[in-house]
Image (cartoon, rainbow, N blue to C red; front, side, top):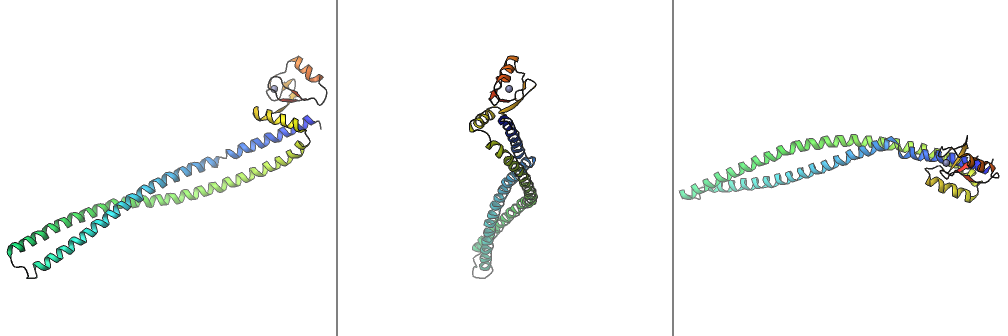
Length: 237
Ligand SMILES: [Zn+2]
């Protein structure tokens, strides 16, 4: 086989490898996974907000309950003196009764506040439980997508390996300067560095070559590397 025909074969393998790389990077499951991950991230943000709202309320509730307990103890101590018979002065007795009264009022307001806090806990706990359920479903979905992606990637990688092992012995037959020239054209010209000349047209840019140009190419000695004067690609006769 002519060197340039071998170069065309290498070009075919390179294009196949490019297509596989494109397929690998555009696996649809990858964008599904990204979307699922976005939902997981948003869900985690909301979980964090709810958890800290719950913590704040539980802490506040604990403080109020300790205050209620302290008031209850204070009422008990006043009442034991009130009914213990040690205090007899009526003014003092009525002051103590008044204090008990006001402590009870304060305690009742604190208890109302505790109830309000507990009512605020309920919807947040319910939302958190829902989020945890959603999170488990999303994790399962993400896991399934990841394993589907891994399988598709490994199939593509196997195809790439096949193409590469077909390409290597071909490229080995080509002189380094020809390969270098081809590679640099390929990187500048959308992956195509060498093209065949078909019916007077360049297979790379698809433009018809002027008659005088065709004449020059046809007249070149075999093995000469000729290029398309319109796109610069190596032309294979
Ligand atoms: Zn061309």
